[in-house]
Amino acid sequence: MKDTDKLISSVGNEGGKVRSDCRITLEIKDSGGLVVDLTSKVKSMYGDRMEALTREVLSFFGIPHAHVRIVDSGSLDLVLAARLEAAVKMIRPDETREYLPPLLQENRYPSRRDAFRFSRLYLPGNTPALMLNAGIHKPDGIILDLEDSVAPDKKEEARYLVRNALRQVNFYGAERMVRINPLPAGLGDLAVVIPHNVHMILVPKAEDPADLRLIDETNRKILKEHDREQEVFLMPIIETALGVERAYDLATAVPSVVAMAIGLEDLTADLGVARTAEGTESFYARTRLVNACKAAGIQPIDSVFSDVSDMEGLEANALRSRALGFEGMGCIHPRQIRVIRKAFSPTPEEIEKASRIMEAFREAREKGLGVVALGSKMIDPPVVKRAERIMRLAEETGSLPGKE
Image (cartoon, rainbow, N blue to C red; front, top):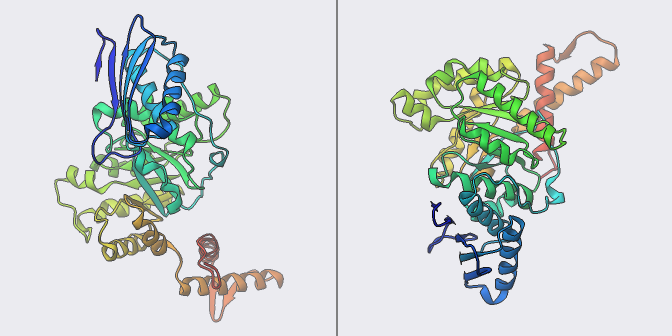
């Protein structure tokens, strides 16, 4: 909320179920200094610290006179600072300065094009309580979402919270992902989050390869302006009938596209059909996406499974997904991660067969043979390549015999 005549703004969240957040009302005045009115159950322990941070942030933005009302629900410094910055910029939309907390050393690691993306955990970008410890569940990727999970009137303030989370929340090695809003709003998201070691941008409702080229160009420009040489990967999400028909064009739009996902809730709505557990209604779309990804040499990633209480249904869905050629799924609750990871990991039978193929390949090379045989069967190069991938999967997922 903003009242430009009175220079008042309100941001954040409060209420009985709100945790690790705060509600801030900022009123900028012409005189009277800074007055901080704090309501918090932990005021006796952390009140002085919170007031000092509030004064520091407002001083950074050149605000000497203001009345700040804070209703705190256990917010950390990164949350309070993000909420204060959002409150300032709602009143001063032309403010370009950023109050940046330090980037944790633990968050400086890179990603790679062929990283395994079995599970990617969606987290609402305006709900800090769900972000703070997500990394301990060991998903392959953590998605800070600025799109569907954020209310329209909260999207601007969510950007600063996501930015601060990228800098201050320990991701424990998970790939650092942000789902932006559809263009043109998504370009504003990029401006805020790209400089902070984002590994991958998820592009919702992808239909036009030109949008991916624009996003890639924007990312590179932002990185250059901040003297960063890393590459930011893209994962378009196919969520419409038109997107399905353009799957290969999207998959090959720019080299930074390394994976492509399908979003079945929006897709089935676009098709005018109900989403079912069996997935018959989406079989064509899913197989077309898999084929486009394999032809383009990128990873196909399946949709989320929305029933977080049905672990048996999740396992069955994940196994069907893997059988179609998908290489991972989205998840909306940490309890889904283990089930998904197990479903996409090699089975003992696959590992044993791949091991025998690799041993036969090694022996053939040592003997200078031009062909590889396993028993009475000839082993073609694609079979060897698949065996190599299975053994790599087994190594990285701890599926090899004797390893956890």
